[in-house]
Length: 180
Length: 180
DNA sequence: GTCTATATGCGGATAGAC
DNA sequence: GTCTATCCGCATATAGAC
Image (cartoon, rainbow over all chains, first blue to last red; front, side, top):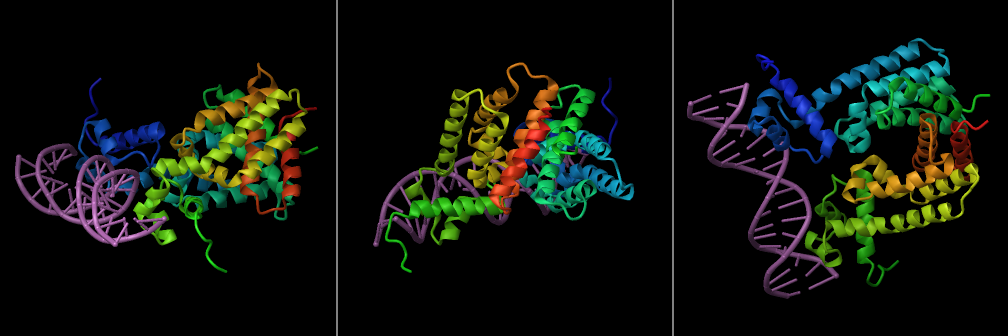
């Protein structure tokens, strides 16, 4: 098949960046690495992105939008059955597993992209839907085990069949909540 | 109080390094940062450590030794009641929470320190004690939620009273295993 | 859109004086 | 034990030709 006509360079840069980040980490990947992978020179990248940070932001924007919308939707739909919330949270994490894997592998990404506070916000909102506004220490612990476990599984076991993985993860997370 | 007489510079460097790593991440902390914090110059550090890597290794050695000994001891003592294993694993993680926090915040630390394979080994050994040698996907998932949740709690909720935290975390982890 | 050439700064690391 | 001075390499980023 023929190469696409034009305008795909920006997207190719983004894909090369994601690939390299996954292979060797974000901090360890320079603009030179990205340019080399594409067979162009560094300055070429600056035609498509104003700076390294600009490139990074363009990669994370979709995730931010999706998480933001998800948190808002869940809050609007409250109260929700725990199992349902856990399931949709698994789906969300699975959908963005590539970037989350990156963030897990190198959490300082969160700081570099100023995502840390947002993540805490989103997580807090979900936790409130699960365990209310005045949780005991035990509630907080169970919630952390449940939500943390879900994203861990979605990200680290993604070579297994999704549907089975989802079911097993939701079940384990639900059990960790300790409901009778 | 008077400054300590001598010989504490090495330890002061290590402490400054740990503080800065916790504040701004390992990759983002240069030898210059460390030297500045102590009010000395970079070359001074090289009198006490052969290289940056040498400094890093000196920080992680105690953790390695402790984990190695723990994994061996647990394997030797098999079979162990799950609750007991989860509890002692919590204690281990809590004991080393400063460094684990670092590793969690920036997993590439594990690669930089060649700790990744060891961690997988240790975790695998513990998992085997919990779920045997031929686990189903559901077993693997539950085990990941349980062990991951324990260390998450030990590290991220360490401002709460330890004994209560430990009890709650072990209980949540045990429940996530789904034993009847 | 992509190139060559270059500016500028910071990283780890060493030599050698005090 | 700590300093000043310095080397080297690689990072991001820009100027200006094609």
